[in-house]
Length: 359
Image (cartoon, rainbow, N blue to C red; front, side, top):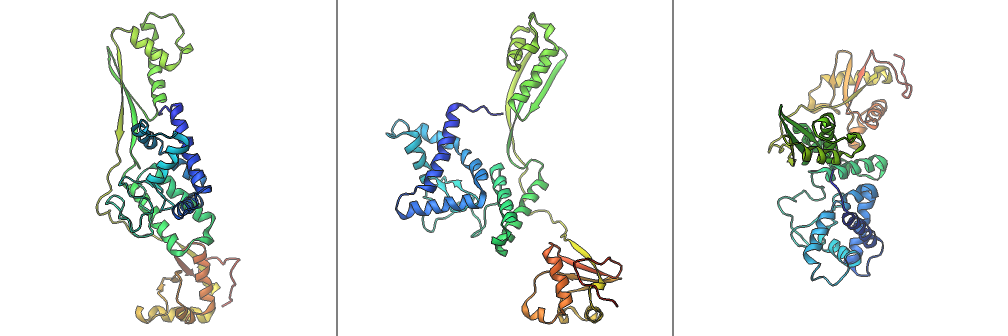
């Protein structure tokens, strides 16, 4: 685990304070007001918890910028430098994905061009490529579920596409984003022990467990369990003349996505409903339509041994006018529950929420 200093924590707090100030107390000039509205839209889209994780992740960047400028900057870090850094550096144009710009162009400059690493379709958020982006994607999905009525069909489809691409990334590689692992090599007379952990403290615990197990090899009467992990490690290898421990931090990169993703079969879901929910007249129509050429049918259907497959996608008014109301009712029933098809089957059980016809 990375160890943060008080300076890191202060910088993170200053960043969050500055974001809130830019959102709630903009200056009375158009660009400041436009920025405030964009920040508010990010809050509304992502929620404060998800956006806060994005903002505090900028701590290293603002610290590095302050390190370069502090000698020549006459203003304070918290009330002057950090807000101005946010104004000059952060692009708020995508409410789902506020990012640090690296090309020096103001975030709301007219007709700005995206670099090749930032290119995206108009209105379409970038594909998640890291932990922070993944959190933003999950936040978008949560908001879509909580406020489904406020989302247009295009917005929902964009979110579905982004979720599918994120899932594809996890299919290609079990490692979804770059991570650092901590490694320790303990050399002793019997060979070498290797320890690996995602967290430096966990790695210390592993090495300390080894040291405690062999504590009698060094001349120290203290109980090793009364010492901290780091004290145990330092004492053991300082006093042991024939063993050593070396540590390192190694970056692991996920496997790159292929230029052309592997083809996978299309999948879908359907629900099974009894043909008793149709009138005998509608059943006769479906039998007749199933025998027609596809171009002549008022709806795409496929006959099965005991009934018909019927798609649930929305139809034009002209198409709806050609279909009986009981069939339209069943199509809407399946679509409202997230099914792509309805399988009408004579052996299926009837559903309480639908009318039943005796034939």
